[in-house]
Image 1 (cartoon, rainbow over the protein chains, first blue to last red):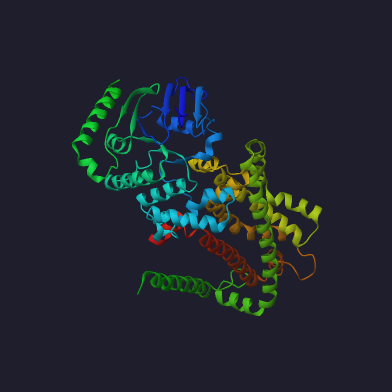
Image 2 (cartoon, rainbow over the protein chains, first blue to last red; image 1 turned 90 degrees about the horizontal axis):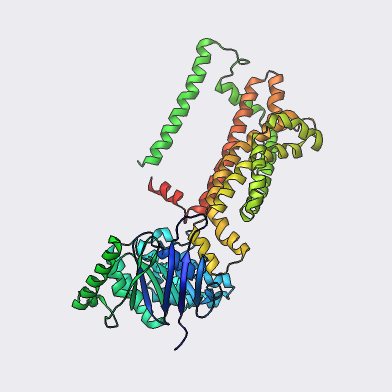
Length: 254
Length: 263
């Protein structure tokens, strides 16, 4: 069996000075190419978990391996998509997307070509010279995704990327994300509050319980690929959502 | 007619009314010009002494601009050092506040003792009163960066220099300009205070502050008024230049300029 892409072994997290643990005994193995959603009540440490996999926050005990390396060593393979687009407001769309390559010191011509191709791919070619404040929430999020993809990551960590968007925009972006996922075959850890979004996107859903954050259930999503807008209208989709919702409700009730 | 045009006409009308009231009060009460000169007398003093007024104006402008530019260079540098090394900020920040609370009038004679009378001393005085708002505001902007933007730079292995110049510094630009607005307004005042003490290095070459003291001693009150008007206009033009630079730097992306557009 090949090495798991992301492996968490009995990981716990307690913030300095805090009385209680945020996360306790999290064990999770994610295979290459899996799309795993993490869902759970507020305060269950979903975002903290993601930051730990990115090496932005150390774990208090346990071990995290990303492609067999420590999270910090593995950063080159990983891109993070933050809640809210978190763009640099003083940069145009294309210069926001180019950021990572610019920091690496890649030649300008090469960067420009990569960025142009990527903007085409996410449907932003027309607004490449616009500033973030001129864009809608959905477009800003596309820029944010393009920025994450510019380094050709193997692993995407997404922290409630579409939470602030209206439902129609969110559905559209979900479909586009899956189209890109089918092409580029990343491994994805996707934090969300929405059961329907988790079911639509994922191959597996991890349901966390809170206080302290721990894995309560894992659900495999057996919906056929490729998934499109029509998938949401299928009976199988509805059943999966109902099942996951029931498990999540159990977690909320404690 | 659009609202801007109407506003401009209204401003001119208000100004004319104020000047008329001023002149009228003097006519009715027969106040002598050495107590309160009327606008017409001031205008004629302005006209007669225009070359020497312009000369004083140029000197003060040079002093205030020199002090202001020095305060920007030093202030931004100090702010970047404070943002980079937290312990240095905690250690030294109180002293920058001290620099502002020290009574500048009290130490101006000392500065002149050390640096000699003349333009350079006045620049130092201007620098001292201008630098604190720039340090305080710029530091604030450099350290209050969205945590996730910092994370983004960390994920992409940015060097400290890249994080400073591509993230913190642009993030601090609106704050820098807020400080600069304050400093540009008080820079002329700093120049005048300096000149009250430093006088002039060479006879007849003093700036506005020096000329005001001199004219006042000579009971040339109308010329004092003309000089005060010149000083006011100088401060106003500094402020205007800063506003323009701020617009240039921020209008593409910052929320403050969107608010202005919406008006």
